[in-house]
Length: 417
Figure 1 (cartoon, rainbow, N blue to C red):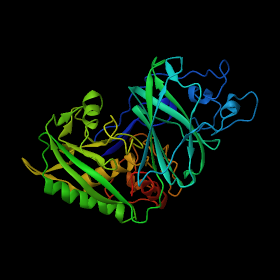
Figure 2 (figure 1 turned 180 degrees about the vertical axis):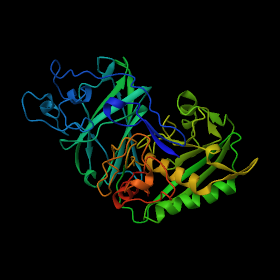
Figure 3 (figure 1 turned 90 degrees about the horizontal axis):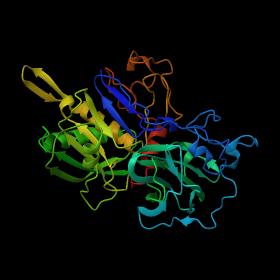
Figure 4 (figure 1 turned 120 degrees about the vertical axis):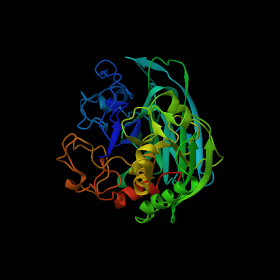
């Protein structure tokens, strides 16, 4: 059986650094650090960003409070767009870069005592925000017109995108961002990268670069056929068409760990001038030998931003081969196409419909999740979302279904045109 594994790198902020799909076992990374709640001693606009949010009903959503004893009541006090950085339309894909300095430090975390404020125009259709520092863990809290948004986090790069469901479409107004990073980074510089789209899209297209690494055992013709099947999964639900923007074969080790410097350095390479194109790296296998099929750079990834440690997805060929007879292996085209589509879904902002324990991180409302799933014991056939592309584990039936709201999220990522 094949599993979709959530790697909870920034666990306490309830978000994913990357998503991986595995064929053998379920695992998760250990919690690298813990938050303490400084609200009682340090109330202020960044309070919720620093706290574990024990007062919130859902830790991943820091909602505003009105009780004077609730530190969240100061979350957005006296903020305005008067001195905000103005996001202006600049062609089909608008990209902005803001440098900032970590101004405060507490309990092993560095942060900004005041938010970075962006003024969004009426033309805004979609946007993504990436916090980049180059250290191990980054994160951010953000709010649009005083409405708190889902906390985002990730390894090296934390990215959030709007919309991530029907009710989160960006609008004209004031966007406040509170960046975070693990470690003492006081007075050091970091970057905020904003990618935005300012026009409606009627026939959505997704550009991809395919990069074959080293001696990965797959041909160009095989991958071209796989991409046709991948594209059909999206197009059959009125999702984006896939356009092959570039094909590259590079030297390098094709057997790599699924996390760490080696895979980060692979994704940090730059291949074309097309900032829209998502990089799909093809390797032989991951060194862990646990059947991992593929890994996305984030949920979502820093799309439109080249050469980061989360820029693209990595897919292994070896676990997609079946031994038809002794010593004779054949590529499972439909499985590989499903893996690529699943990881593209993560990179564009889709979460699992259901996790292994029956919980869900997804904010998509127009599909049922498998609320009774138990660790490692649930079959896809038992769950109403078992045939959805973003279900956590594979089953006997094809998993190629997408809901209308999932397609809405895919089509509204800023790099879709």
